[in-house]
Length: 632
Image: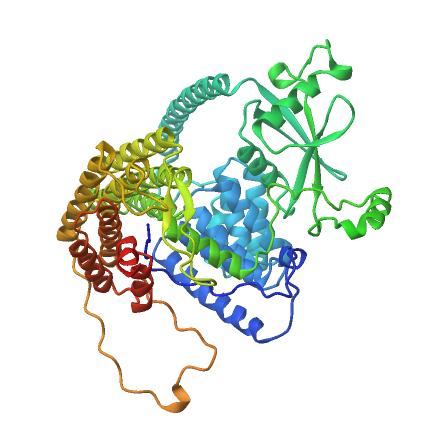
């Protein structure tokens, strides 16, 4: 199988002088033109975040502010305003813990940041911490007495005084007797309202407690965690079956100033073992109940379990892997307490070379897997739901916004099922990968890909799983073109498997037709029909812009600069896949001694229609088995 692909090349590859250790290390700060680029990018991100915030896209705005903070540095004085703006986004999303965390980081850099104080005060007030909220509001008003938000927030803590002086429609002051009766009625009504509110709050608390207990029963009994980071000890309660990701999030909120850390517990043998999964935390809970605590009741402890003690060790640098040449120095370092050779923490933040990120993006594009598209759709859907629930949005407008949100979630669900199917397709291709034909000449490019039927049952099961996921995606979203294209591509892969089972893949000249080859012929033809049907419903490509006037010499592209690769359209990709199918079908017919040239001619037309390079098409023709047999 010779599959033509359309994709950009990686922007950078490592030179011969780069070593594995050098690529793993964080890049040092060098004062060059890159600093100006980063500064400019930070300004662009800040403007973009402000526009998203003004447009009420608070989740995306918070993400943009976070990217800007990573560019300028979390300890940079400029980051204070960015953290404060990010806390305001979380405030609009009602993410109270994130508001407090970001506002605290802003105040750590700039203690007089009024916006951060106001945001944190509102978060404290929303979570029932009125004392802390009033302290922040007072501090903000003391910093800037003209700030309307700080002034209004501080006034909200003052008790409301009844208005006296004017009575009813008359300009005369009410008599003491009448005023006393009105005041008594007002106090009685207020007391009745207070009782109703208290009863309602009590009922809500009971329902919430019932839900919490039911959830805890499904998560296992609660256990108290004592997290120790140096001299700092934080205590909180979690379920025993908590996921590792949720445990790390809880620790990050308890220690917001720790950027990267490892989490360990004391095993029964006295060694410190890392926690990197749910099972590790369950082992830590079991270890806390043994040892000196074995058989002792956990009196006066919430949940009836002895507390789990976790050791938090903050990381300050990346640990380089030990080399064989440094065995002696490594032993000396171990005696001195060196951490060389230890694995990085699960939440460690590392700096990755740009070429690795480009290669990863290219790899995902080649497999057809977009790892972040469903997250963007999910965020957009949530933003629209939050916008529709705002009090100032009318019922008619909310219906339209909620319909848009429903479409976003529908597309996200279809995309998740589609990517699930792609996983099975990748596994099927891996299981039937038989390498490539040898090159035509010494030093030449490799020949066509070879399929193998050694794992036939496994490949068929994977292809059937992929089919079910693609069809499920179409049930969720009938006009999801990617799933329709993937179903056609699946028939092509199944035909390749049947060709291998019939002995028509790999070395050899002629072969006899059998049931597998007949079924492969039907699958190839069915895939071509499917690709034809997909092209009929896909929108036409927009016309390409006319070429501009010839640039002046000084405006010519500098030597060594790479022109940005044009991304192929969906129609072009379908034509390439259709051409690959016809190409492979013509090879099979050539091996069976049937007419194959017309199919190959149509395949070449599809490749040219998709915009494939002439050199790639010529190379494909060189490795075609029918063409090679004619020249032999």
